[in-house]
Image (tube, rainbow, N blue to C red; front, side, top):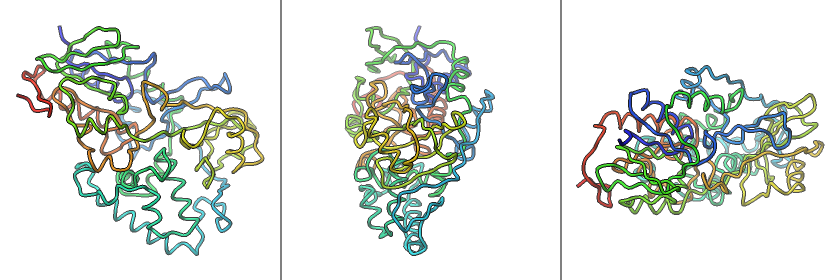
Length: 441
């Protein structure tokens, strides 16, 4: 007998969709291509120290900005703790920059004020419900560095803004889209500071705490089941897995990262505009590095012109050892090069001893093909909302296609909630066929 729904991918969006449909009495099957649950939320043993667990995927949250995540944490009594307070500043932003939290010299304040007004004005052009391709925003879908240079900032302000942008967008600022940076501002209540200050809590025992709790409420799931085909040409959707087996369902929820969708054969094919961007893939190739050091000050934060645009304190390991977190991208830095790692840390903190590094190369992982979503220039002004729109009986979810909170766990939950509501609001079995444009005939 066909399942009511097959959910593909056991990250947070897939877990929530499967759990909520099961709670509603639907017969569901959750398929995960890998040998573990959680997707880009990934708690594992440290590669540098066997008695330490690290979070190599998404870790930060803010209860005001992320109410769905907060509700899940409360539902399962999952403990969190405050992120480390940053109190010691060692920026590399030029001789005029002071080592303080906001190191902009007074000589640049007026230009910065004008730039902030421009950025907020442009962010307010974005309607989070419409999608970026439907709002006449092509003039903003340009390389971020070009957008920033047009703001005519002073050198310290310019480097400060570009460093944080590189951190958030996970690709060099010459390739990242200014429109996507403004989308993140819009998502955080149209606040520039909201983007940065939303990182104020972390999971006390890693994201695996919540993953382990959620899976207990899902009656049937399978690991190591890579999906290769979704065929909805008949009355029942057929899902083909790598082993050659076909499974059947009335609805399918695709909850894997956007860059993996090009590995799935869709029958009928997805519409061309959507298919073209999926084939290109988004451009994020971020590296989140957890660097084990000795001799760093608690609460240290560094921003500047290094190959690590940001480097800051993550947590204490022992009395004289800490984990620092750095962001860069895999085209700019080789994390397997110990000398390069030391040089990058010593650019800001020459006195510390580098003991090791932890990271997961999401771009090289065939089950993900990239970390969080960060579009290439020209992609989201061409197609955006349509990437997450249902195609017949296939629903697309995950933080990659969230309109409100892209790249965040909150976005994963938001899109799962939307798909579940759609499925529960329609008959379990939908008759008819699709043409190549997604129209039922």
